[in-house]
Image (tube, rainbow, N blue to C red; front, top):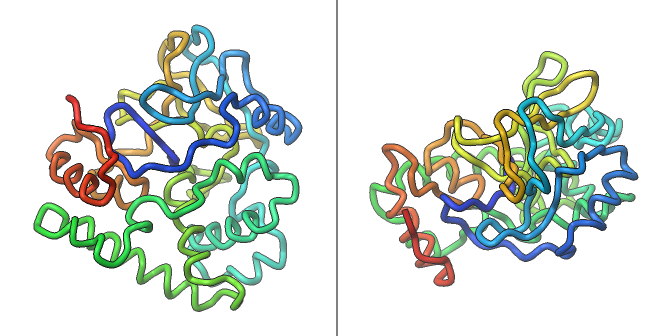
Length: 283
């Protein structure tokens, strides 16, 4: 998520994002096909009742079925950067190098417009919290969240100082948010790295053991494969890993209601003080 992503799930509290510009998803999938991304007939992109715009099964899916195949060339990652970008980002962590690339692609999509249109227009997670809004996260319950954000912001600001002057801090902060909320953390050619994947990045998050799909890299392609039987109409989900609510809220902007040993009600209370439109929590 969201991984990624960019996620909206029934068991989560989250900061709201703008609606998708393509409510049917058909135009986006048409673009993806032209970019070499293959999707099965069971893969649909549509608004859901509780999770926003995301991936849904259009028919029953069996274990092992492939739902999406993204060629390496269609992904956005450090390995896909043009030489000029590589030279600019050689001293940066991979996540910051990818954030810089996301800034450049967002400004000049060069054929990726339908995909870029689905990226956040404003920072997600705590990257979108500023000034007095942080008062909503006072207290011991949010100590880890604040630590994560302060460390992440310090590292991002240090990286930003090494970038060309036309990349403002606000612009780079959005790029970092795009990476933390949408990139998948994958092993590619023996190296773990963040990767932005069109189409696959629309899959919502579930805790490990509750997701129904997984991403693998094989034969120079990123493959979304079914891991348990999926019924028609069921969201297609992946796991962003085992993360505490502080990590989820920091990177993605949501907190799981049933996250073990985490104070989800406290996190939700903080969200409601910032975003009064956040719906009430249900177990």
